[in-house]
Image (cartoon, one colour):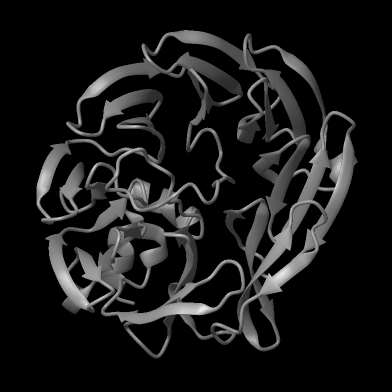
Length: 381
């Protein structure tokens, strides 16, 4: 990896954010027909200061120790509540919002008025005050921290089960079961385990050897009802891509992506119905590339050090931050042409139809993704 490349990446604040989240990508359901990705999983393990959370008619965000609820249509503040520590990840059941905070406590907050129903020490119940929420199902809340997975009954302050997975990077949720990377003596695999018990219910073949990876060289995400695995090994500038069945881990498709950026996991990957859009690095030149994996042909190249703000197609567009000119851009996925540009950078956000709720500096902003126009901006203060 070239030193000039490393310095260029580290000088961009949004890239640092995505480096911290390199293994966590999403490909959410969208109402527009052009989006090929059904709602087959739910992504979590985000801090509310990095990514807001939609809950019905409101949008939740945080700054410092304060949790905010805004009306998603007009941006009016509904309520704000101060916690004992900075809010981290959370999930809602429609009535209550469950979240952890950096004071080590677990909080249950009433969605309607922001009152704290009660809180308790996470360490006293599960033996870990660093775990973050990634899923909610029925009466249980699921948390993750560095290969440790927990099922928690919060109302009874009870640990239901715990599963430890070596090198277990959380991938996603599929049909109410969880997928995680796993390392044994042979190398890296992906395992699937049950939400009701934590028991392993399936695993892939060994996908790559230990100590063989380069950059963010092992990245997985769900899309098009498949589990896609991208493997970049030290001996190659290209990435091997496997499309696995999430039911039995059969390899349904296999191909190679040429000249992939070695930190591709930090910059995001998106899919159309027959193509993958990814960061491309031929001869130290930065591009976003669309590659048709059916006919193995390049569709287009777009110049720039591009980070995908959303890893999915939105009304035939991908939304990126272009580090070459320090602006956010919408790129037409069919033509590879610029649709609109904004001279600012946008952090990760939450999608709602053709709108996005994005955190930028100390503001929560709603944007029309078809035009790039700001609908409303509210300060977190």
